[in-house]
Amino acid sequence: MPDLVPVVDLASASAPDQVDAACREIGFFQITGHAVPADVVDAMLDAAGRFFDLPAEQKRPCRPPSPAINRGWSPVGVESLAYSLGVEAPPDLFEAFNTGHEVDYRDPVHAAHRDGFFAPNLWPDVPGFKDAFTTYFDTVAALAHRLTAVVARALEMPDDFFADKTDHSPDVLRVNWYRGEEGLAAVPGQQRMGAHTDYGVLTILYADVVPGLEIVAPSGEWVGVQPEPGCYLVNLGDLLAQWTNDRWRSTLHRVVPGDHFRRSAAFFHEANADALVEVLPTCVTAEAPARYAPVRAGDHLLAKLRGSRELQPSTAASTLGERRL
Image (cartoon, rainbow, N blue to C red; front, side):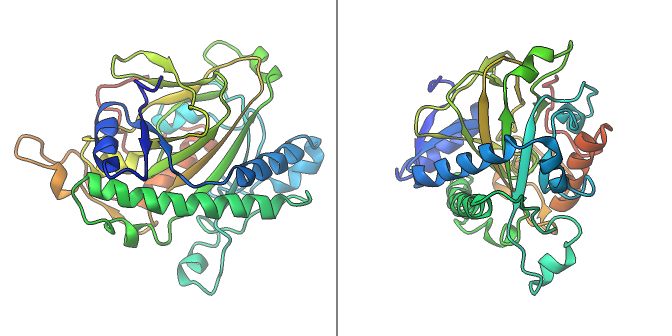
C-alpha cells in the first residue's frame, strides 16, 4: 500500500516534490512528522465512543436544525454521499459527529455566517467531550495550515498563497463510527459511506488500521487503503483540483460494507466562504487551458452538502472528468 499511497515526511526538504508527485498520480498520500500527540487522538476517540454508546434519545438533542448546519450528530441512514456527485444511491451506513471552530461573534465573518458555516457547536452532555474535541480540532487545524504551505510550494506559488484564503475557513471535524452490525444489513448498492470526492481544499484523516476505505487507483480499479501505523492519510478536495486545473486529483473514495468495528476522524480543511477559486497561473498553459470557471468556495461547499443531505443530485461542478462511479 505505501507504493500506491506514498508516505511523506513533512520535516523533509523534499516534501513539496513528494506531495506534487503523489497528487498528480493518486490524489492521496500519508504523512509522518505531523506532530499530533497520541494522547490527543486517544482522548478524542474515547470521548467519541462514550457519546456514540449513548441511546438515541440522549443523542437526539445534538441533531442540527437544517442541512446547512454542519454540526452535531448524524444518525445512521440519513445521508447518501453519492448524491454529492449527482448519483442516486441508498442511504449510507455510518454514524457521525461534526464540530467546527469555536465561534466568536465579535468576528464579523463568524457573525455573518452564524446560521450556516459558523453556527455554534452542538455539544453533548458527556464529561470531557468538548475539551477533547476542541483540543484535537485545534491541533489538526494547525497541521492543515502547515500542509497548505507545503502545497503552495509544490505548486510553485508563494508559501503563504493560501493564508488569506483560509484564515476564516469553515473547517469541520467529522468523526465517523461504524459499529459492524449495520454492515450486515446493507442492501444492493448500499455502502457504509458512498463513493464521493471531498469538497474543499484537503482532508486530514485519522483511521483505524482495519479494512473498509477504498479509493479509485490510476488503473480505474477500487483498491483498499489502510494507513501505516502512526500516519495520517491526506487527500485532496474538489477546490484544490479546480485550483490546479486537474494537475492534481480529487480522488473518488468510499467505505464498503463489513461486519467489523471501524473509526475514523476526517478533518476537512476548507477555503473561506468568500474565497474566489480560480485556476492557478502555474497550472494553465496553451495546451492545458483553464477547465473551470471561477467559483466562490462557500457556494461550492453548500451545494455539495445539500446534495448528500437532502438526497438530491448536487449542482456543484464535478472534478471527475472521465472518471465515473
